[in-house]
Image 1: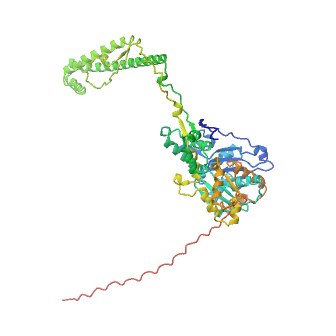
Image 2: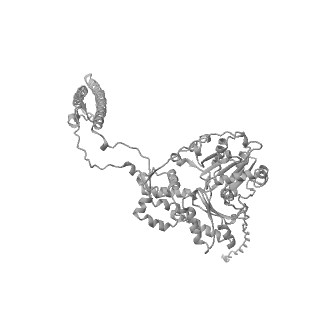
Image 3: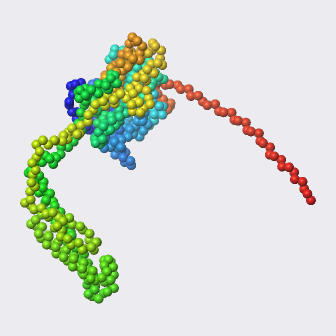
Amino acid sequence: MAAATAGKVFPFRDSRAVPDPVLELSPECLHPSPVPIVIDNGSFQTRAGWGCGGDRFAEPRLIFKSVAARSRGAARSETQIGNDIPNLEPLRWLLKSQFDRNVVVNFEIQELMFDYVFMHLGISTEGCVEHPVVLTESPCNPLHSRQMMSELLFECYRVPRVSYGVDSLYSYYHNTPKRGLDPPSTGLIISSGYHCSHVLPVLNGRLDARNCKRINVGGSHSAAYLQRLLQLKYPGHLAAITLSRMEETLHQHCYIAQDYQQELDRWRCGEFYEKEVHRLQLPFSQKLLSSTLSAEERLERRSQQLRRLQELNARRREEKLQLDQERLERLLSVQELLEDGLLEQFHKALVELNMDSAEELLSYINKLSLAVEQSKHKILQAEGSVEVEVVDIKPETPDLEQTLDESELEPEFSEDYTEVEKPANPVQPMFNLAEYHQLFLGTERLRVPEIIFQPSMIGEEQAGIVETVQYVLDRYPKEQQGALVQNVLLTGGNLMYPGMRERLERELLAIRPFQSHFQVRMASNPVLDAWYGARDWALMCTDQEEGWITRSDYEEKGGEYLKEHCASNTFVPMSIAKQTPKAPEPAPAPVPAPIAPSTPITG
């Protein structure tokens, strides 16, 4: 693959989301009874559709990112959900999710997600949703999260019944018939999503919740790590290296190395680097540089600049003339006070003008009169020539003694002036703007996905996926270990890197005993198989009571109640040792007060 793409430049797609249309509710979803709504509530994407037979309903009808954007203080109707946000980057600081890692904690955002799903699926019944709901949840979901979810569905939407299942188990059972296995099978599920990765053992068709393990490393950590590496490598393109582009780069250009250290050594070779490096083209604008302009274009630009300078100078002269005339009128009015014999008002006006005598006043009047006449003369001459001057406008400053000729300080340009063109250098180097906006993706292609196996690379003090698998297997006897590794399934969007299955086979070969057998397979569609499996379960169990929590069950047994089925979480009784109350300590005996010696009375 790398050899075929050597030397190519890969542009960023920068795909924008298209708003989802409001679909019409098909009669097949209502008769003879309302069919279930299948929702894969993922931390990266939400997928929703109908649990109805037929090729028309075989795919999810809605796929959108599980984010909402609403500014502080905005109304509920102003919230943007999923595909209503065409570009996430300008609103990145406003984005909110209902998840903390892989557990739903923000049920206000979750309610907005349900509103979006039910409205775009065409459900228009007032006050309730008449369809059952099949909903995915995280492995070993906390009881409080399930209680709040059941309360939201039963109290707010008044659904008739709901079923909870684990997304990885739905994917597992969807892929089981494709491998020719009987339904109650034993296997090991390795899943990795946007926030977390899981190792889930399945014994005789049921999840062994006691030995499930979670690693807090997922696709979001890989995207953030890649963004940090490229921003350090290209500090001139910080704003262009966005998180959305890094998520696109992960799926298009990264791969898993079979031997990480050996692969890094290969990248030190110059020929290998030139062959395998991927060049990512950032968007840029082609601007004409000054060195590429012809002589005619330079003359045209020069004439435009001269015209703008002429208009600017004419406006400045008029403003300066107006200010000088107003100030001259003010000084003449003060001089009239002296001529009329109003000495008190005259001296008060001199103090306001910061002048000492009538002679100083007369001197300023003469200078201002001369400046006004010169300004009028220049305005008349400006019609035939182009002048560039800088006028210092300070109307409140009485210092008018600087009567230097402005023409000595201001260069003049005539319309007949032409700049002498210098001969162009035929060997002038050209600046390649496209290459400046390219990101060279070298060892980052394998360093970033490696954090699944080595979380310490990003500062996470956790075991990698292989160490976690070995820890889980060590908790079973040898017979069960052999049965588990015979059916290892990889699912989840963060395991879709090229070379992932081969790397895990290599790692399992290293940790398993000599001549032991194992089989690792990738899910047919690691992203959508959870929804497909939930739909398969809904089609099979719609008319059954197993796995469905009805409204009467909710009212009688509470929101934490769970009806188990083949793809659900299991009840794990936990014995919490109660602390025995400590016996009250005996109160210390009171210490008798010392008796004061009697004082003899002398008389």
